[in-house]
Image (cartoon, rainbow, N blue to C red):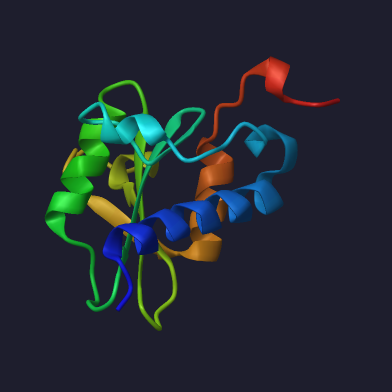
Length: 136
């Protein structure tokens, strides 16, 4: 039997590696946020202006409302919450606040759930990378 916490940690490391591959130098600072275990309300992965909550579970089909609440709490009012989850033998899904769609009326509890590739495209649009991070 696989330890659930170890499964979650492995998923966080997998995501960080994927982000390094997708985003190059602007993701070079990424690592698992170990402060999340000492301080309540911390995201699993802090990626510039995105606060990412990662969940990995054996079975299910949709994200749990409490996962999204946790993502919103870690993001606060200053950052954009992102929930990334995967169930065994299923593809990665990403959840964003619907307010990222510029023409949509702001409703804080509504979300948009997309596949991994679409999520990466949305992250590229949403990332606010400090100038000193960008290599010219």
